[in-house]
Image (tube, rainbow, N blue to C red):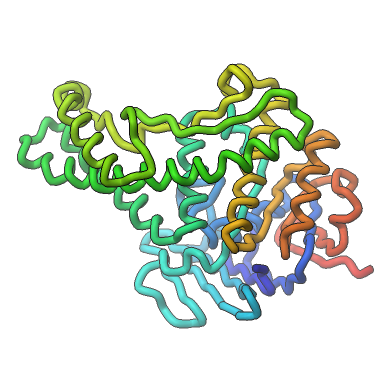
Length: 364
């Protein structure tokens, strides 16, 4: 999979940008604040329908604009697909596939698959559970785009149910939302657990390849015991648990069971990574999670685009080498850097220099 052409209209710092893109490593070099990450972000947004930098649409729009457009031509197994995404300030986003309008923007999910690395990856180890849940859910959507609907519906149900609990609504009003919480929650938990089980050996292998001494293990940590990759069994367990905590939920005004309360547990040797891992070990774990994700998708027949956003400056030589080696497996890699000398020479085959609002390709 690769992006052959990218066009941005009123996206972030770019009023109009059109790039023809080859296979292999593509580097965007420029000072901080020049707009390099905006290019990476446009591809991430197209892949996940969300940004890794903001939860709002407005910051994505060029100043004074009420609409931005991301257009990409994507080649996958000798087929070309044109994807257009219209991002709006005050109404729902709209999408097109090969110029045909879609009923929902979610229909474009899966057209572009990406695995991205950024300095914020350290939050996967040191940050809050929400960072790790988001990591799992993005990988789930990449593997199976249909799950985006399950995740969105589940989040909507939690919000509505919490609102009803806070206002102490009648039990019969709450019942339907509780049923949906358990139905969707049992599915999402099963998918997450199956994902973690499949991902674990790749994370362990990548961590060992970084010459780290302690073994790395990942596991799913649920607020309800004995949950598994079996959604039917999860449904019964969550139902029983909800009955147990029903009064506590009313007292506290919040939903106390379900995947929104869960976490991805990261273990290094005998200790959890969070709170015990050194700075270097934390980076090794974060990199292993991301490269492991790429390895897993490749093993299942996918060939995602890699995005390495301002990451090389954060890493030492061995970790840079590990990232460089994975780019050899990818059909296309986007790399951003402020300092060209931070990048290994083999990644400098196609270079663009970025200044505010402008991107210029160097001629060899």
